[in-house]
Length: 327
Image (cartoon, rainbow, N blue to C red; front, side, top):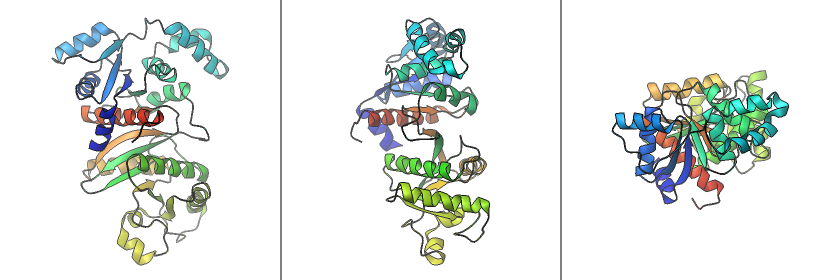
């Protein structure tokens, strides 16, 4: 994360934070502005934001504020958003009403290039927080499904877990796409991706429809991304233990133990990252959204200031990368 923060500080980008009067968001905005990590824009009633900041004795220097309900952008945003959603059940009146949602308004700011990225979700369930992003922002070209990834940081090891937030029952094609996107994220974090497709079976030790789904995903990844180190299906301990791989499965095609773990379904991925955090003592950063064409990330509900700062920094480096800036 220090590397990511240094990269963000090279050229701080503008980030919109729709939950502008939330105390944790205000503290995080103060920190990223003071440290030159980002240029934060808080959405909400400026008077309420100032009152909350004063109560916490926090300076708002370097922080922009914008009232999304009374704003000159509303008319243009209404026209654009209605064009996007009119064939998906939204009337013009509902479109105007939806723009009162700061998540939607913030997403429109990102869509129109008025800010560089968005981070939100501290006061919402994940489904409610991600929905506005998907309603406004397109997927990347060629991507069928948005997916989510966690950065799991241990003392001497960093792993990426996917998908633990979005897709409940992915098929082989979904898993393959997630693996490829997760490999790209590993490279974003200056890691050489070594991707393990996880199951309760090791390389055909159990043969049924479920394990064959994972094996098929491996084949699809190799077809689409032949230069990516990937293998499976394999058990989790096999994937992360070099001695097991090299002793029992010397034919594996990962080079070394995996640093990117692709889980067979959302339940297993979600359970795994939470156990790593609570019992394994790992620092968990994310979730990070993969497969959308603008920098958006959604916080876990009730995140602490450090987690918000980490996610803002990552989002800002993603914004830099989207502008073609050197990493």
